[in-house]
Length: 175
Image (cartoon, rainbow, N blue to C red):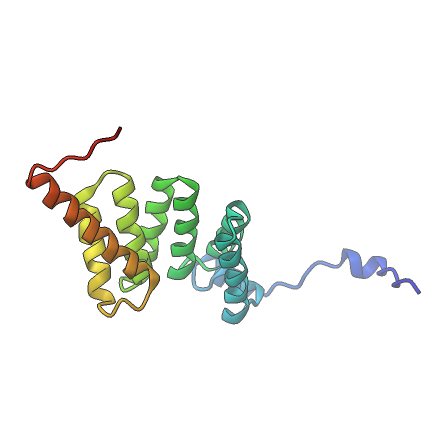
């Protein structure tokens, strides 16, 4: 049994768009996700797929989904943070920094974004900014309940150890 073909009237019918909703979208009163009727649960289900792709190394696919989520809801700190993490893994520290900054603009207490921005500053050779952000991440999560703050603490301890070795005159040989 084959599926019936859609009638020409159905296939050519324009979607109904409320002028009020279109005006709200155009003026920034609602997000694209709200305009098309996507719930927070649906958006976060998509983000979970992207997160799994990120963790399995499928960075381009994860990036594409996170870009779509940022377009659908540009005010969500988590979407910006995870897009930044993808960029950082892809080696684009400048794009990562931009997204981490946006994530923190929308939620100054996003500990993952703060730690990630610290790691990004470190990659960019901005040691002072890195230390400031990594310390801020630890202040936001002093119990180290997140992987990002565990990394932040480890980085800070490594930096402290390297500084102590430098000050004491210890050097390591690259050979």
